[in-house]
View (cartoon, rainbow, N blue to C red):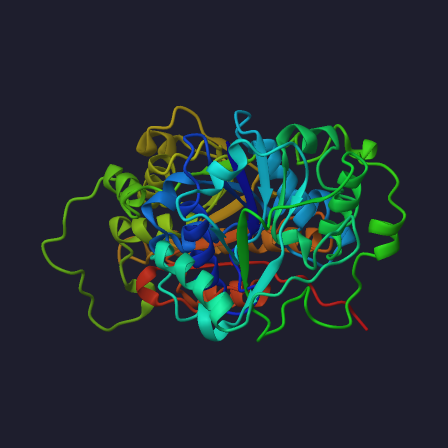
Length: 503
């Protein structure tokens, strides 16, 4: 019946984002009752090493919301490729919503564009939003937006949508909150972008939101103006339901702050003369890109335990225990490293290509086991070495390609190194191998630093297991934003920091 289109990213956009988003998502789910209804959240440009925003708040979502929620992930590589050079915004509404339209269920007649800070309540408690739109005449519908103070919505229990909807209805009238602000005919109400309801077939006819304007503001009015050419009037849905906005301007966000350049009203609204955007008819909504879809599991840790249990774990009889001596001599048990390695790899796209720099076959096998257990499909390339027979034999991989650093720089999406632990019997050999590993990583880091100046380049993760060693720390601290992670994780990782321009 209806697809609800939302967007955002895993950041801190506006005050108390996680709570108001959970309140909103749960309440929206509560008023959807048709079998084909869905909530599509387009997670736009969340950093590759973060999980998506809905995944981050999944424990605060109701079971109904999790079942209805489809997450479409637009990665930084997509944003950087097409849009980064023309905007300072990190989440783009036109592109995000268009991706959502493209992904929506074709069985659904209606699309609702709204945001993760809105709560809707049908006037008739016996009806759902799905019931309302079932026999609604064709058209483009807006809704007045009532501003709910932070003081009130912050007191709500985010996992009790039925009570939250009831309280919004009560507070709106009891505390004189509800106020309708009318605007020009084709916009109808103030802040029109929090409820824009239209036919799925119509949004495809007009090529979605206009992706030429990505500086923020007025895209909702642009859509109103374009739909005004298709219908005699912009309709109001206020006879069927009400909507409250969880206000969040206690802190500045990039779009609400003063002084930044935004979309021009004249360009985006006043001078618009037709409903469609022929310039993007073949490209809107990243139609030529393959995007990931994520569904939230019923048991939130179930998917993680599933792949961890695929690894060759046998339970510890007692904790690892090492006496106090130099870090270079502390063992790095592969089984201990695996969960920390999985932690870093988990948010990445499963088609990434890894460049591996290291000489310890046992540690390489541990990496391969994690890689395969987590469902990665991309190649693993051995960087800066000439032989791979030992790694092929140990890992069970049928083939392993050895490449020069320059080739790895062209082909890889992530680089993984290993700094081997010294032993009494192989001290000189291991020391020499570690020097070669460090020098190869150094070269790769300088190549990445050269690439980092391009706005279309997506920075790649550099990760070193047993990375708490001094030589590794000096290298990563010089070139990357690597954090001082606890030594016990045995991992250091980060992204290259672009070189400072000479004055």
